Length: 276
Image 1 (cartoon, one colour):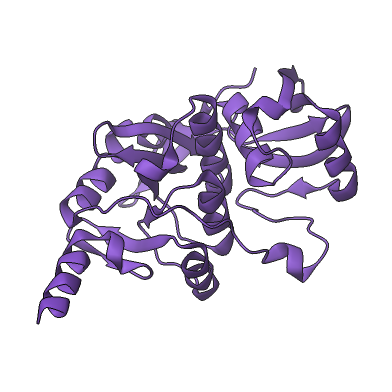
Image 2 (cartoon, helix red, strand yellow):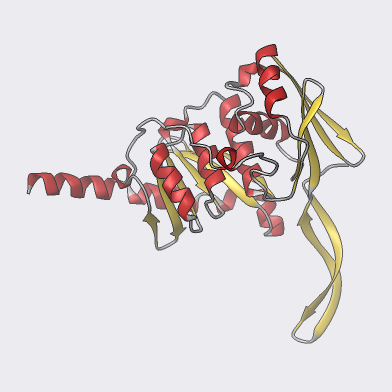
């Protein structure tokens, strides 16, 4: 049975005293993504929100351009893993045959199996202008994540990716042992609900690597906010994609690495500078 959390027996050592008990830990399961009968990738992930994962992975990998390109999607639970079986229109199937890869993706792996350097650092999509957010909105959005992380509250061992918009707050939040998987799941959720990502922010509980920027650009969100620091390549990619990259977002503030004009405080300063 594939469930997202398991109770595991363990021995606890604290201050020289031992005790027996159980701890809730997240499950990690092989997830095979197949298209038109052929396996494209096998990723390790949390067995939850799998339809979202299948759709989001397909969009973020460029296998499909729209959720409507998937003719059918079945979640097939096997003894040793889960198969996400998708059937696509013929033009998308032809695209897969050119890029097919048979890989085992370790937890946290975002671009395993690519065949060239150019493919690994491919340019991200260019996002639309989007809207301006206040520092207060950014702080409120990040503080709203923790209470909604049901798996992490039980295990303290999974990542989350969420989407926040001013009128609605947290629109969707997805969790996974892999940070890339969590973002793929979020992408699928937004695509399936036809959510306009240009009206909000992508929020991450992880560090920001280049793949996370590429996936956010594919989603179409103009702003991404993360609790940890970005890599230099992630910063360069966000700048080129037109994304406002905010990181090291903690309870006392955050750092804006690119496209500062979407943060209201910077916008106001620019107006002052022009008038002066």
